[in-house]
Image 1 (cartoon, rainbow, N blue to C red):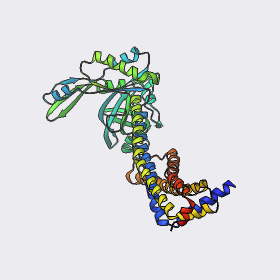
Image 2: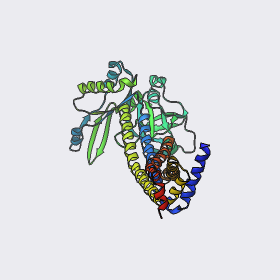
Image 3: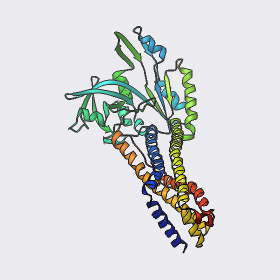
Length: 422
């Protein structure tokens, strides 16, 4: 019986709202824009946050990245005269970190130089990365063809190289590359594998790889190209001696990452008079990014909530006007036996139907805007199912909260006074 009465009240509420279509539509706009903006802004914010978090996760939550940096004083001096600058991480630093801390599982040295690579008539500048096989375990990149470097390559000092997919496309777009011979800096290397390209992110966060890398055993890079680099800049010759450009340190547990990073920094300070290195902790960056994401979502949700508040006020305003218009109808219903709770239910249902309809239209708009942003601007967006359910629930809540006062006011009307109302 109650279910039948509820269905009848909903039908009556929809019929009453359809009597004033334009007024009902304008009243819903506040809820429509509020729900749509909640979903759209959260989707855009979530997409941007996920992209940043994915970039950090690619570095590995268990890893610590230490990068060589030229001190500012040394950089200024090289513009004045020609001399040799010695800075950055050393092979001893890598060995020292690997044996000094029980929480360190392994330390992977990385040496980076720029050399021209040539296969046949095609040539391009490559970023030659000297490292060991553990690099491919810490910086996970799918093997597209062939194999990665192995410990046997290190022991035999083989002239072998692993290229990135992007580099292969530019050098040999129509041919198989495995087994080909490529000349890098005057030396010949056999291509043994291809890994998927991963572009370096912008900003302070530097990924260990780039689009056109060539991975070679670090002992071979040291023998073939040495540690001394010469540049000609502004009419002067700049000579730099850098043993290692980067180290990737793997820690045995997440709980030890930040503490070990602090300890490593203290040890490096003892052996480096100038701070010629920078330490990046992906786990700390991940925590910071997640905290920023939560704050960002709260701010966006609060801004969108203002639109819902305005929409709720609009619903209350129109329901109060409806009570005034239907005062005589309320008096007749009360006179023939309708109870106050039935009057409250009728007006409350009308308010909820109004807000729910606006909420569903808003969900449609909220799904459309992120799709357009992704298609037109190329920005990643992520629509969370929770945001859809939450938005619809909030729109229902807005109808109930802002519809309760007009409904109670209608129920409290004196039947005799209501019947006299013109």
